[in-house]
Amino acid sequence: MKHPRPRAVLSAWLALILAPPPVGLAADDPAPPGGTIEGRVYNAVNGSYLNNARVTLEGANREVQTDRFGEFRFDRVPAGPIGRSSAR
Image 1 (tube, one colour):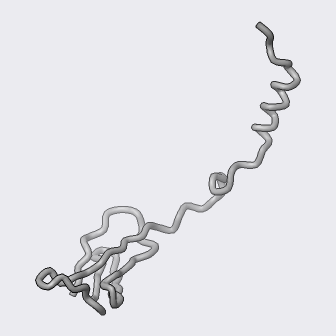
Image 2 (cartoon, rainbow, N blue to C red; image 1 turned 120 degrees about the vertical axis):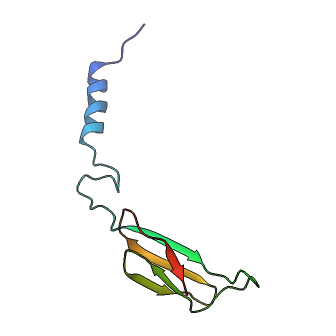
Image 3 (tube, helix red, strand yellow; image 1 turned 90 degrees about the vertical axis):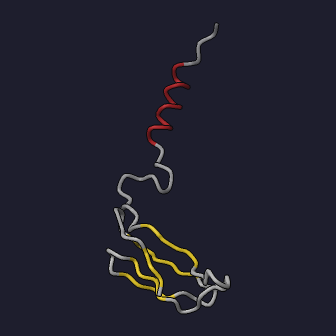
């Protein structure tokens, strides 16, 4: 059995070690600022989506209103337990 040339093996290892890390995996990248919670609010009786419904994220003191399609979104929600959201 033929062994690989030591110089070629050493060159390959050096290339792997000295190469810059892939984008997004650098050790000095800051942690993401939080997660996202999104959804839709609808009327359970007639199935229509609610426009301008107020959605509250309890425990985070955050509030948004739905758009004309009943959609809402909370960005940058901190990690950890959060109370349920409610719509009014």
